[in-house]
Image 1: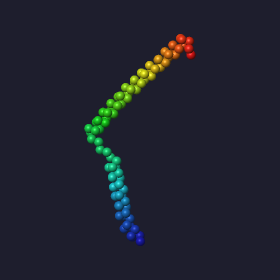
Image 2: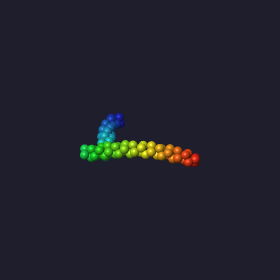
Image 3: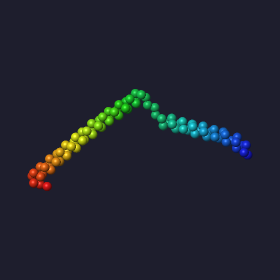
Image 4: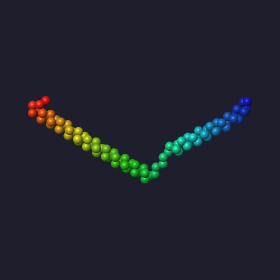
Length: 85
């Protein structure tokens, strides 16, 4: 009985390892997306452009926020000068 187990266990281990490695390889290849250098350069340039645009919009927003605060202070001053609360 034990000799039969030793004869069966080695092929089972080999089959398990080959199946495990094969499934891992298939899974990796299935999820792997190839990108050409031209596509990669296009993606990185668009990303850089988008980051620059975002920084510009953030600066504009900061400027607009300061303008709104100045106008609100001016409005409060005008209300106080007019005698309102």
